[in-house]
Image 1 (tube, rainbow, N blue to C red):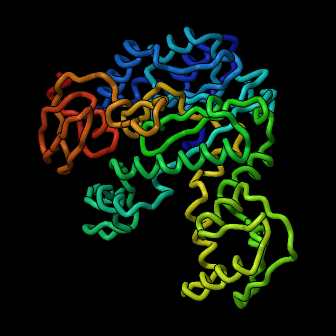
Image 2 (cartoon, rainbow, N blue to C red):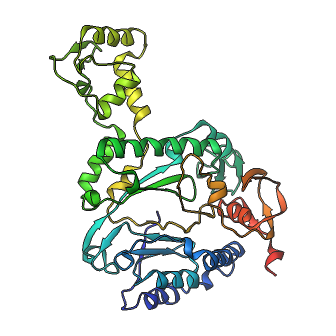
Image 3 (cartoon, rainbow, N blue to C red):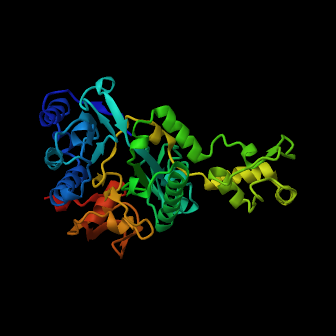
Length: 418
């Protein structure tokens, strides 16, 4: 996330935002020479005017810190609003490219960080497509060279034209990416429910608006957790520091297996998941000779040894979350129901993870035809329709144009603005 810019603290949040924009950054004049930003800002404003009811807020609006990233690229943090109505009015007026809200509640949300008076924070998890390192992503994503501006299909570590290593990956997630992200979400929800006793109705799932999912846990038992305790929770979910001894046996540096003293091992949590993945069962919750023979067989039939097998299984069943997101109790997150400027899609609540399709349910509803100047051929699938975008001028719906422009692989056609 871009480093936030602290706005001045005045008694009125509307005046504070106005002062930050007009005085500090002379906004919106700073983007008058960028047709894409001018056009996107108009589309975003129209969307929020028509769909503000989709923005989700709890009953503690006045206790949250908000952040606006405007189309000049700067973030204004420490914004505070008395009500949803006041927030919506500012969103429509200033039409931010991104809108953020703290999962934390504060006594003084508009104060500097050390003066806010932290009350507590909901538990947030971020599952992002880039952390899955899927093979398909290397093919359908693109590479943008910051040096010569070349856009190439597929993922490259350097530019084929100028050989610069200053490249940026353009994420264009496919349905396979979404399916694998959903699997990670399912794993997380199961662990939160089974191992931590969090009820499913306290677990809120949102599509991030780009290439991932946010999971918001609203539960009083976790609201006051410190950063350190949240860190311990993430380490558990990631399977870091797991002791093989917990499975009932010990492995030395030579990969030799020794049965631990005969104890009762209840099949819960990580032990249950690992033993299930290894196709092992404890008899009466105890280690027996049959169990040890199976362990030895696994060791002898795998070239990487039993330690390698277990480590691979830990990697497979751990949840691919970004721990920093969960640990940071002062971070601000994209507000549910608002547009993600990286894609032009909306951060949307997921009511049914199995059937949810972000390329249908997270599209803005602006479908008037516009002209787009595409930089590269690409194929997109939105709202049940396939769009074959050709290099050059295309006539396409606004919501598709928003996606392409947000990805940096096309421009709004200049004549459309005249």
